[in-house]
Image (cartoon, rainbow, N blue to C red; front, side, top):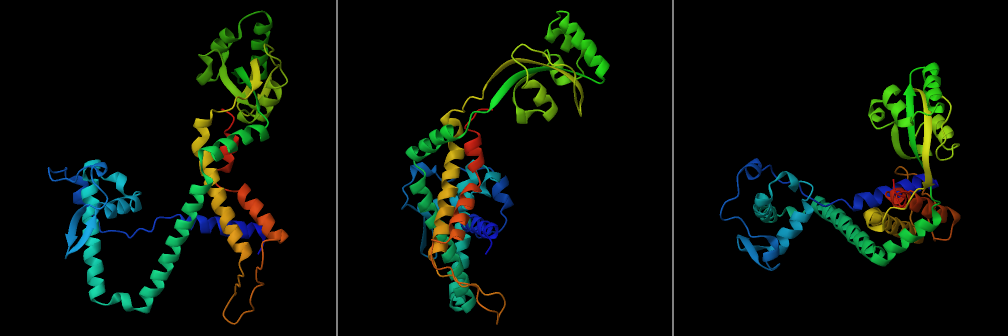
Length: 332
């Protein structure tokens, strides 16, 4: 399999395995709209996990069951008010118990189709548990801090400049503004009077701290040739003609660790999970068949091949969350 295709497949496997295994419940608009009653369930922190909240034909539903369902349904719960949320999920669990009991009575669990679906869902859940276990091992305060400090060493600080500009519609108007600046008028006063940029004119043309990538190429080329305090000649961009002043230049400061910690942890999680899947693939004997009657694809025997190593490197470098974690180690 080509490296690029192999990497995309692994990423899809990881993403699919991380999806919650939720069963869509019937609509309960009434639960979303009705206010909480005096019989609403207590706050979850006040209830032991083994507390029985309800029984359905004798089968108990516990606080632990409720917490598991709330976690599983988290993407659908925000639309329900906080005070109704637990009642809503408990009603769902009661319906789920009633439905499953009815299905068992009808011996629907004895069909080949049920067995296939159960095996598939079991595999998904086991994969989910394996990936969660790998994430817990990979993401620690020490590993996150180490990744942050390594990023600061590896990523060269980007230069940025504090810039003002005067925007005009013609080169002649830009030259007239430049002449007034050379005559001694302040940049802020001329910008406030002449600049066609309404967002900055009232602030003396202040654009703030910008990197090269944060401004049009023509403006960046002019600005980063200037020393602090210098003013450029007229510069043409798609927006018009500019006169630029650089007030300060500096290396872009690093963002504090706590600010980028969630992104670093997300990167460490995804990298560990993808490395795990790639390692499992590389060590396994996998035979893939095209169409029935077709010839078997070559088996993957070990993890030492160049293709496997390249796939692992590419998958790690393409892991969602890696770029923000590394790039944002420098403050905007």
